[in-house]
Length: 246
Image 1 (cartoon, helix red, strand yellow):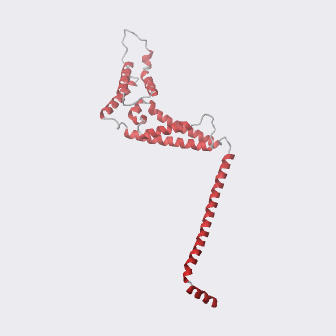
Image 2 (cartoon, rainbow, N blue to C red; image 1 turned 120 degrees about the horizontal axis):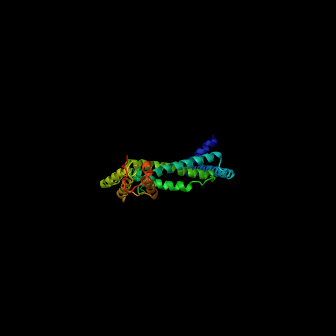
């Protein structure tokens, strides 16, 4: 009890020392806590580095050739890639669909432009025949094909929504006329002259409105050039006029 009394006598006489002593004590506690935090962060960093090193080692030990599952995955991706390209070519090669949904071939449309960019990326990453892909390359190609599929779906949906809304009323009339003439140009029941004349008018109506690729023109001209089998088998005569088509 005497010692306790001595402490309180000291504290009463030298009370002004309480604040510095308190500050020193808190400083020591804060320093210790900070030290523990630094150590915890260092251990966490070391663990992350260890995990990365283990991951790199696992990749280094992985075989260069892809697994059978990877082969199946690559085949599936190539098939999906081809399916989207086939859907796109239906617009590029079919003049009737192109007239109905002109935005699908218009690179000035933002969604169409995004699709064309995604197509370029997927085409560049497409594996060659017999090429083996690392897991990283397979993931990269998978992402590209997925982007390609989504971009096409979005662009197609928008093209079907807007149709010919980007054209003026007069231009839409020209597109309607071209669509009607296209039916005649590809109708095997029409005469060759009727088909050729309708085809010429189609090209005139579309001039300056929709650009037909060379491949689309070739496909269209093949359809226009078709004749009825019955008429093709008949010998030509300069004196007898051809029979009207039935």
